Length: 442
Image (cartoon, rainbow, N blue to C red; front, side, top):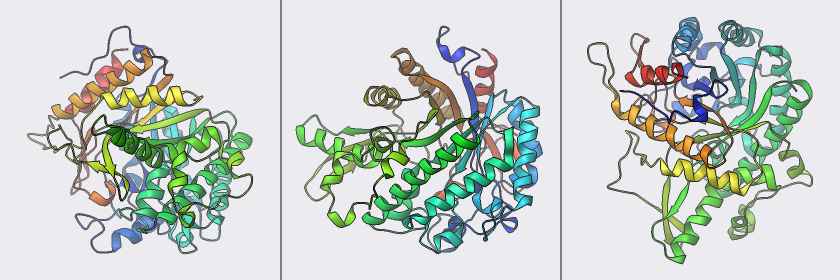
């Protein structure tokens, strides 16, 4: 089984970056060598995680990082995207935790020695619990604590990093964490979700100011996730419902970056649910970025609903991944083209794309042909967007390896490398070998 692109595809140029991606809480383990974070607290509350698990061990990457770097190298990738654990590198008094910093310095030095470009995400959801205790992302002060963290870590890491992203998926932190409560910290209020989103975007802008000043030679940006919204029928009501859902779920996080305002749907919100925006906030948020990271997995279909403006429809007969997400690669092309037309974008990197599949290891092999099909169709969907003028510079497969899949625990496997959690043995899946071969064919 192979993954192929058209022979003339710009993605087959050596200038196009191929990588793999992970996140700190999902793989690191070694919870006893860092401060507690909001996900530790969330995991400890019964019923939050489907299999009752936590991130204390995960893939034990802190212990096994050297062999993990060898694994990354064996996949022939150009780059590795990973996140820094804020509670691992900053003590409660705000000073650096040198042991935590040294872990990342060793990792970066090894990646650089092997010619693998480090793409560092500064925040992938693991807020220190002591900051949440003071209000977390509902507290405007947290944005300035983030700015301070960025300043300290950028100075500490020096010239070892190729690219920085301030945040991964503000939507998930704000909407899933503070508005509907299925992610940490598990709060449930519309006003909370909107205010958390605003403070995260403000923190992004403040972080970008630090990066522009202290790390001008790295590629600096942000990573947003998008779930394109489609109308269930072509009736005006359903079309309007899909547009409003798109503004609420997707455009809310990108429009402030480029247009210095929230989308129209803010006017549909009760006054009490709208975020408090202070004068000058949008100027801070809309800092110039060197790249936009885009994460894509699936689409959503909506119909009109008199009570809630829009309601999502389950596409019952559609092909789905093991996590229940519809496989609809055309949405990937549509998304990239629509964003390209709507905003004056910097170069784009696909910072996450992949699929959870019901993998089985048999005779030491994982023949995940379903995942290979997913990558085949989605990589070609990216290529189709490029042929329509979208400036995509790189693609990162999610994920390097199976890991702690947030509220799903260890039940869902997104990796192109299989992890046996009892033995911590890594086995490259058929999809990982196919991805390696595609990269090697350039």
